[in-house]
Length: 168
Image (cartoon, rainbow, N blue to C red; front, side):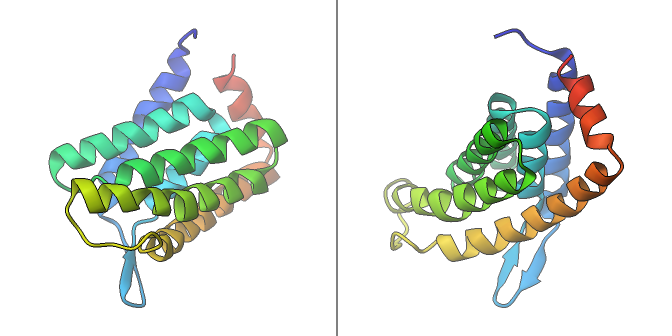
């Protein structure tokens, strides 16, 4: 795989944004949603692709864990969502595919993958679907924010220019 300096630079900026803005949360009922990672996942899926998107999610989760602002549950949730979102977008070229990939990947699959981590590695008692609800709320919020940004970029044709520049 040939490394693209532009994609690496944008990836580093996405990681920095996700780590810095990870303290931003939206209260929804009894839970708090942290939508920035999901926003970044969708943007990375559309502009950078599956390898860079998944790497961004991994680096963000790793840095947040090292700083003590994240948990081990960030790894399966964000990485699976980023990967599925990017793969669906890559093969369909539809923004809706990227949105659905993030919601299904993080909210459902990532939420279920957190069960063994919570049970065996973190010693928490949890059911298989314990994390699906909170992950779905969070990913839907972030995906809606990404949809607003990408829709604005799409209507101004800026999305095509950004994709062209990053893929040169």
